[in-house]
Length: 86
Image (cartoon, rainbow, N blue to C red; front, side, top):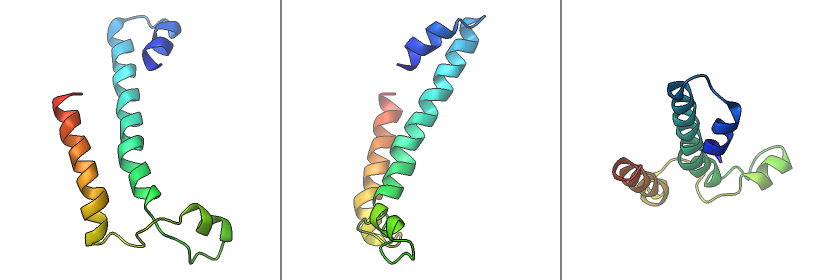
């Protein structure tokens, strides 16, 4: 989808188009594998706002050893696979 949109914008140079695609893929990957894993497992059920408590009702209230065994290993495995197969 990013490549399709980059072709439709009609950049003046192939270098600028490639740079935009590279930056877009980086940010999408960062959000997908960095921020979402961190936020999805966050437990904030004791929040004063009930909507926040329902939104963040994950398993881990803190970054402890169990979080690193579950989520941290997953993030490292994805980083290693992206290193060899970008």
